[in-house]
Image 1: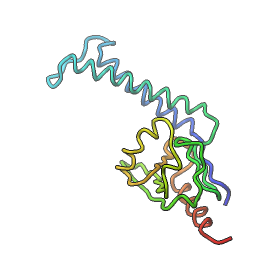
Image 2 (image 1 turned 90 degrees about the vertical axis):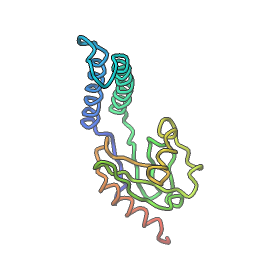
Image 3 (image 1 turned 45 degrees about the horizontal axis):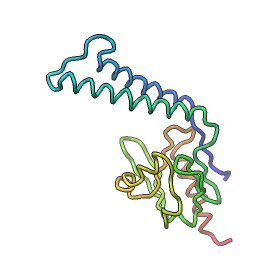
Image 4 (image 1 turned 30 degrees about the vertical axis):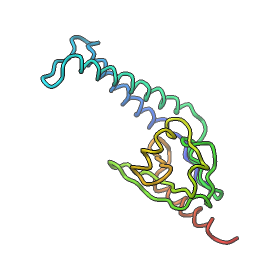
Length: 173
């Protein structure tokens, strides 16, 4: 089996950017950019405007981040005989000898590959992914979660590569 490489899927990223733009439009509507601020029995006008601004800021940042990924030519996921490299976590390859278990976590029809490491401190993450690592551990019970949502490869293909290369790493040479 050849090394597994997953690249970002431009059409999937495009759909995600469109979704973000839709929420930005809803935020604009909530602040009254298209007319009057919508009225609600449940929320005051100030609360509605605040929620609108939060939507605009958050989903604008999401859209920009996702849009930037569309122009990234590096493959975010490599699975091979030496180990796994998940670029959203770090540029560092995690050797099979450091991965003590690989499990699955599912949430709303989305599957995540969860890496359990012998010493997670030896493979520090970066950016927002690293900042959310504690919450990730609480949710999934593992150290690093991998999602193939924005890539051109499937979860099943990745798990097949992990089974192939991970078990090959356990065999004596």
